[in-house]
Length: 111
Length: 113
Image (cartoon, rainbow over the protein chains, first blue to last red):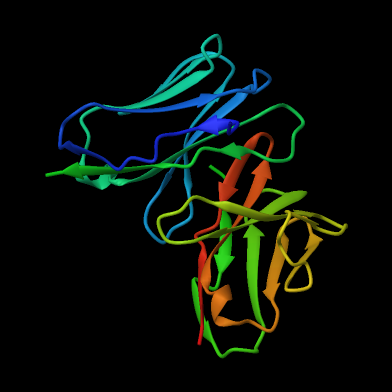
């Protein structure tokens, strides 16, 4: 079993829809949770960063962490074609050098 | 957010030559940098962890003599692909840690003819 599981998709939704992206994990020690967006042939860009449980909102993006269920989510409201990209979740424990990444979900927003 | 600069963006070279890729943290000091490789439509594959002033730590299956990493300062790490061959053609991405966050460079597309 992988430490972090993420459905690779592809996921295709119409413009304006609410998108829900998710990751599950097995290591209860993870404390720091991140979502990255990667466009084709570009490096990943940090979208959201959350410590421990709870919600965090930034514009159209909301990140949720449920440590009791070992489940994190990224919601995108009013999705736009420019949101079409691969979204990767990542997490780590305090003091660890490496982040553990999910496989990434390919998302397409159709005009 | 912090900025990581990676150069070149793309490089084409002949088989047997060596190629150097630079990764710089522009507005923060990074004691730890990472090098990834990515094939089309696949996820990131960690190649090595680069620590300032010490030898890099390579992931299992990555040839350290093929992929030379130097992290001589707190803002610069380099990856040299030695004696490159067509199978080394790939997208290489560096990243640098600031606290618990990881910031990525824009990537380098290497094509070996």
